[in-house]
Length: 241
Image 1 (cartoon, rainbow, N blue to C red):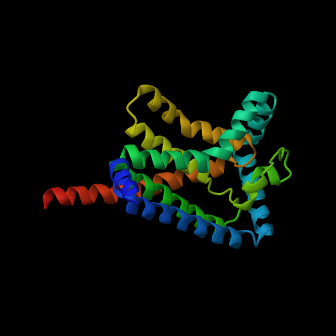
Image 2: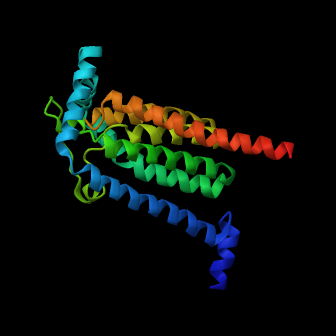
């Protein structure tokens, strides 16, 4: 026990207790997400109606579904299709989780703002999923291929969580924060490109329309503005005190 405590003090920024608190926050949010998913799943008719409304809006505005063009382009290139699919399945949980953990361990000063931005964006998204459940393009029967093989992932996935796209929101937050805290030019270039790549991937897999992504981007900007404005004001007040 003493060895573990000493290791925690040496490796962890604030010891085991703080790590436990952070894990409790994330698992608490996961439970809340499941509750919201259960509510959203009760009204598939509304979800499909909202999805078709997006189809109608986009075809009126752009006269075509660019997402379908993206999917057809990707499906003709096996390697690209594999990478795009990997991006969709891993960008939201695997990449976000690793990014949050890395910032916690290596750039701890940036952690609280990063964590709060992700959580606030996802809370806003959950409100949208409860009140505006929306089916994704691949389920609407408008030409998209539904090639999902969810497996165990389907147990934790909300099938009617297309609007807003939290893939788009979280990718933008991760990209902005990692770009800011990474020191390598190559890492900065990677994270600068990351949001746009994720936006492309979620559209090319038939999981989101561009309107979902625009809504997700707006959610990310709103969340980051709220979080960092509060932090800036507190920092300014502390300096004046």
